[in-house]
Length: 508
Image (cartoon, rainbow, N blue to C red):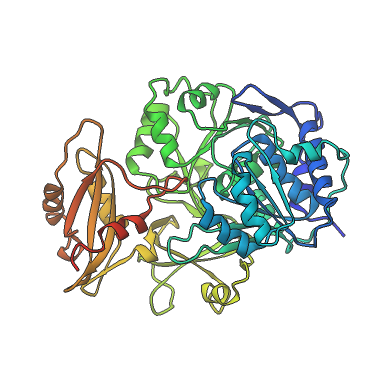
């Protein structure tokens, strides 16, 4: 029986000359493919030697390092389930994740060992190791005594590879269970769709506790046997400098905005690059256009989720159509995308509704939440993404927001992304967020929170007045607040739940 372990597929893609450079870091360190092979074998042997139960979870909250990547690969290799945790999480959150996932092993930064180990041991975790971003920690100390040969654990496509906790802006975070088959099918589709080819080099600038950096970027490079230029922390100047040696860059919109702020970004500094991918948060049309003008490259925006990895993408090849700003492109090969109305029927082209998806990349369900899992799938097996959007006559998908961000004001549906688009086009506006707050007459009304471009002065009342000339009355925000920054999570997404909380007493 063929071994369908994701690591087996990644290992098979290593180049023939395994002494070639696999990873080069921003600190000047070099790792060969042989280093990856040996280190993952040693860590896998360490894990295997702990005699963990079948399907054990390995929970990891550490700073970004090549060794942290090796720990992920070693977990797959040994056949266990990887559970990455955002480095920003504090004790109450970690207590919830460890209590919910019941990991057999917890790996944390040395500086957090005191409080993390207390939580872990109390929850019944047997093993707690440390791993720091300077190649120290008890995990590496222990692995150093293990053999550097390891037979890859046998896994079927339906076996669990990872659990990713969704950010949980409403209620408790849910653990999305992703299988070896989910991850491998998606990586193979993207390898073809994005035209990965021999000689490609990836600049890895994203965190590795999230789908974009851990799966999309990493699997893409490894499955292609491509060298990785590794950035522990994002530095726009360094990233631009390294583009002379690279061909692929993946980022969140914030990273592109920061690079646009550097004078060194131009056609010359990016001429060696083949592909720039943007995702994880909505890309402003202004950023899309500014990048095109400065570099001559068109950003490729795509759409995915923790539960599904990648779902849609703007075309890589010109023959597939142009890359359209403001859209997330077409459904990927093998992925079904449909838009449904409140009555559960498919909506006509161009109409806004709930986005549902189906495909080999769609997760197995939520960890230990069978009712929630059942609730999020339709009777005919489609996953309800919770996103709201539309599909145009050419098949391009546009996301207009989250269903939970939808504002129902006086019985009318207001889609924040539509109004934000109008506000963002106004002179002096850098970015905006529209949220719904309780209102005694309308049930709910929209309020806008806006940040100005550097050096610009904007007036909230004027923005509201301008919108009145453009939009139906029910869509107009009741108030507009000008602030210095919007609250964001680590992937650059605006945390609308915090804005709603902050303004909820405005009319009550």
